[in-house]
Image (cartoon, rainbow, N blue to C red; front, side, top):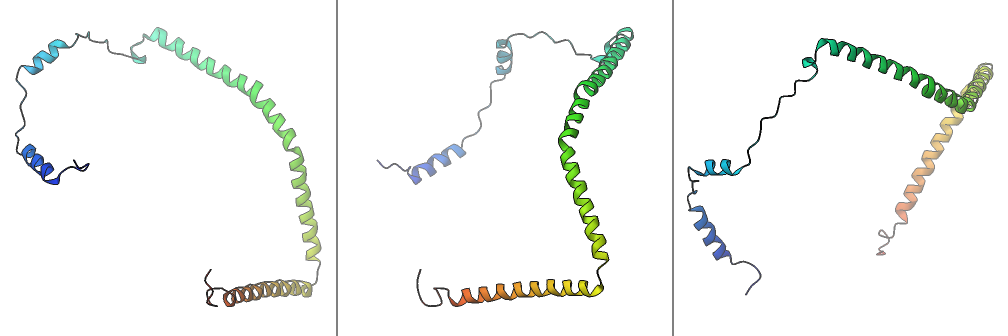
Length: 157
């Protein structure tokens, strides 16, 4: 016996199954199935907020608004204000460091504005020279790697 199914047998079964007509259900089946199901009582429709009497809706709405207002006040007073104070105390050193950086930058800018233009031209030229030398060294390094690649020398890695 082979573990794989026979292709001819499978094709014959497929043809036989495709040739069958669908079997209709007997007409009395629906009635018998419905009779076998337990009877259910109709559920009352949920009418919601508009169905409440007005004399209950208005006080409930006023009570909910008062509760929300009180909760917001309590949240602000007992949670947010202490948290803000603690956060302010935590961030105070960062604020001082930021102000120190700003003051130093303003001092450096003031000093830089007092330099003659020749210094600025020299600084720009020096920065351009540094960029050009970096590009030259990088291209030399890449070229050197191309000459020393083992594949070009015929060495298999």
